[in-house]
Image (cartoon, rainbow, N blue to C red; front, top):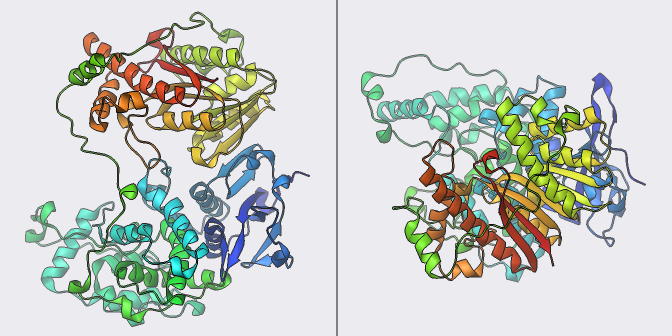
Length: 640
């Protein structure tokens, strides 16, 4: 039986289903930690909008613990993986499903951000909940594949702590490097919106020796807490004397503290920005309590509990310890922790460290360092191209197998045809030409019953055309941007398509099997991620790369990709090719565009040879006509 994911609730809203993985319990937390984090957010926000299901990670998982149906002050149901909606079975948990099982949101950051947005939509008065998304509502919005910060919060620290909890005590010798990286992050200067003004206030405070405002703010913030929270800052008034803390906690009170309107003295206004004092971290992302703190708190808590239990000293983590105590004083956190059976620890000897005791202990392993060299290149691409030519390596373009193939766009419904949408006439025509190329190749490769995945689908131009043209195939659209995928869903509903599914997730959270992967203008390393997904699934791929200048070494990918290129080029030389591969814009001189096209061909030849090393037959060709896009390469791979 497959569960139906939504039912009507009061006020016209529909109940969504939240699926969380369950392996086992470790004292007061559920493993995997992504589940504990999700439940903690629900408790913190006092959210009952979702029907929560725990899904065992294996058949041997014991579900007897959850027969009582109440957990974390929520009604929780225990189901098997085979009962999940089909679209969820293709994703890593946590996941949320809506719209009759056709639309799925997967991955920790995507799911948590959606929970916050739904809470605020149902109850607009919960403004502090929406503040968890930070300035411009971008907290943990960037995908972990490209954002080191999102990766640290969403993947690296939870995995490191889980590995620690699953290890035997005698195996724990050093603090996990990921936790040390968080300590290092807390020492970095804070960059926030309008920080120039706050830094000038800090300079004025330093010069005046003003330490008088903090206790008043501490008292005003305390008045807004529930009795269960206790007093926030009575024991830390000395620490609250810093301007950063006053700014941070003033945002957490129910009645916002009015900002002073007095003008700074002349000598403060004339101080150069470079001479202003830096702002120090109060919370994980800077001055304000955000979703990042909610994600990290259960992880760091379990790490500290494990360390204390095994008598491990934490002198190397003064800022993490201070952050851990500070987060506890945020209104609502202690109540949420009590619901989740989290018993906070107290380390009074770690709260304050003289500056001379703050040792620089941040030795981060090479695999966690940013694997990118200096991006300030000098010179053009010709020496690199000549070096490749001397080794017998030149860009190779295969002939297009069906250069004049085209869809009958005039006969297609408006929701399929980009030329009949909001695009301008010229842009709509170019989009049609791009789709002609991809669709022709996919139709050539597909057979009835195939599953086709449109990676980085955006508004669904490729996937919707394929679903309409190939009704005997199943089409899955994967996109990280919610608004783009919602637009694609609306277009699909207008067409009445029944062979299409939508997944809002980073690429790494999709684990389903499929036969063909397609991507139109996947940016930078996203193209390499799509190819990697296809190779792992032993699926054919049709990709049109884009944004070559954004290619760089990441945790998962090292460039050059193929052993042929690695024997000739260094990483920096490969980056020169990538930089000039982006110089194909129509407004550039023809000679420069020709060099850009050649560099594009070389970068994609490296990708093709890397795939051929995995038993693929790969061709690099130009889309027809080439004027359909400055980024007009198409890479087609078929497993041998």
